Image (cartoon, one colour):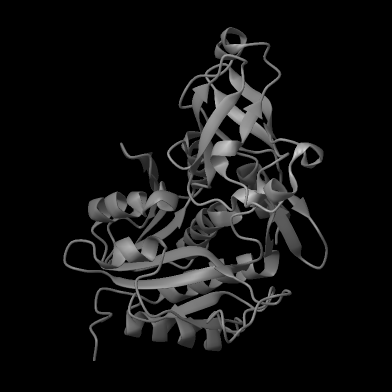
Amino acid sequence: MHKTRLDFLKRYMATICPTGYEEEASRVWREEADKFADRTWVDQHGNSFAVVNEKGSPRIMLAGHADEIGLLVTHICEKGYLYFTGLGGWDVQVLPGQRVRIVTAKGIVLGIIGRKPIHLMSPEDRKKVVKMEDLWIDIGAADRKAAEKLVAIGDPAVLDYDYAELRDGLATARGFDDRIGAFVVLEAARLAAKMKPKAAIYAVATVQEEIGVRGATTSAYGIDPQVGIAVDVGHATDMPGMSKEKTRSGEVTMGGGPIVTRGPNVNTPLFERIVKTAKSKQIPIQLHAYPRPTGTDARAIQVTRAGVATGLICVPSRYMHSPSEIVHLDDVENCSVLIAETIAGIGPKTSFLPS
């Protein structure tokens, strides 16, 4: 990946973007889009847009959701401890002992997720699954009054992890699900802008996907696209404990190329165009079959208004919804190139009607 693109990715991943509180990441995304897009804007829901060749036809929507899972402060007790709930779906077992960054009106407040030490638990309690209601956040406040000077009910938080690179092209970060998708669609639009596209290309960093693809629902309604491609992360199966047969996820490897989904949530002519483009441009891809509406923005885009020819391309990822998600930078780059090359040839007469 070119240094300038990697620098932006690092800057983007450094933002805090829990679902429903996407302002910081959205602002950084639009600032980058301003460098090449015809125009950029944000809607009342918080979705961020960048359009290329706005008068072109058809309208193509590229969607990657910017939001990540997070926490939400719900109560401050008399002793100054914060109780919380989840923003999006958590594996609660990873939370005890984690540091968190709480976004407050006065800036970031550091806290620690507390739990009774294992030394003080009964043998029965040690065997129990961790529940969120049994955890709290310790910010070092002496009491409720001291805590309330720093934190308010409804303040969001994320775990205290940053972007880092491992080796052989692998990178890890909190929130690759799915700021990496929002990065990919912006990069795809940037690449497509240089290809003199016939279509109008709308890149969208959607919001609130983690609580029901809400941003994709509203942004797709506003754009009214004829074609839509959602970008998310998909499960890699090249790690221990992943049975390719039992998980029904197939064989997906890190660095093996973008995951191209096939199934009822995907328009067949668009799927075939993506695969044909991958072959002609020698871009490695991995196929994934999914039998119902997916849990991605593609679900909402497909059924917008009178229906949209929808595709879904995913970046292989390990450890989804954990503090340290992993992606391969080659997959990220290939995903952007595949989308750009696919949409560059779409024009007013391109048909996506089922044959």
